Length: 275
Ligand SMILES: C[S@@+](CC[C@H](N)C(=O)[O-])C[C@H]1O[C@@H](n2cnc3c(N)ncnc32)[C@H](O)[C@@H]1O
Image 1 (tube, rainbow, N blue to C red):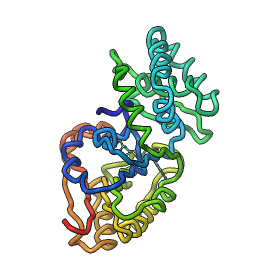
Image 2: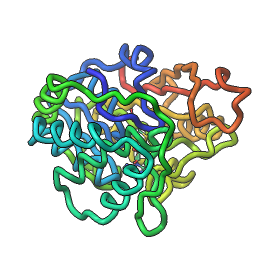
Image 3: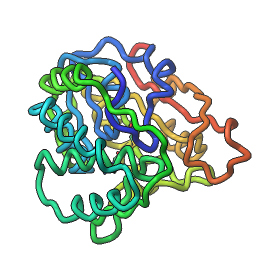
């Protein structure tokens, strides 16, 4: 199925490139879930989903536990409140709500669809501050999609912790798909999904944790920008005979240079014992 939310860096457009490598696993793990496009496509029977963004994970928990009530609450918001003034009122309400209430998740979904480019950005005090977007229509998944997502999430352990602790859980025959914020190079400056930003050091550290997971018998798939520096660090970490590198064409929407729109490629690295 399609993901429920839009997400910067979402992998829905690249599913056909990633799909051939999603096989031979007992459990599927996505430490940087976002809209979890690969997870929803794969429909795994046993999975772990994680994202540092608590409100995103609380949204998935509410989809799992109360899909129909959540959808009703979302539909109510869209029936009356898609004008600019209502957006800012709901954004204020969202910022004032604590915890994982259904109301908060409904507004989370509303902001995801109505905010500028579906961006999720908070300031240093954790306040969501994205301005309203200029959308004319909003896609709200149907009741059957909410129910399908709910069933799928029942087979899934949901966490909102840093990815390092998820990597500790990896075991033999796990398939781990890592889609971290992009390596900060000249073509991918946008890394501020959530605080703290995911910088170079984090990427290098992530490779060490991937190496440990690989040693336990897991298959690792990493999405990243075309950064040569990252590729070099990767090839230093693993025996190159275990790595398959795939170039993916992209017209990534957060692109500092509109003229380059269709030229960027991003990389997919598949690291497994038998290629
Ligand atoms: C490129 S996006 C993932 C997109 C996803 N593959 C999709 O299809 O939508 C990266 C995600 O990593 C999350 N993130 C950033 N730092 C993290 C960390 N230290 N641990 C876990 N998640 C983190 C962000 O909140 C963001 O949702």
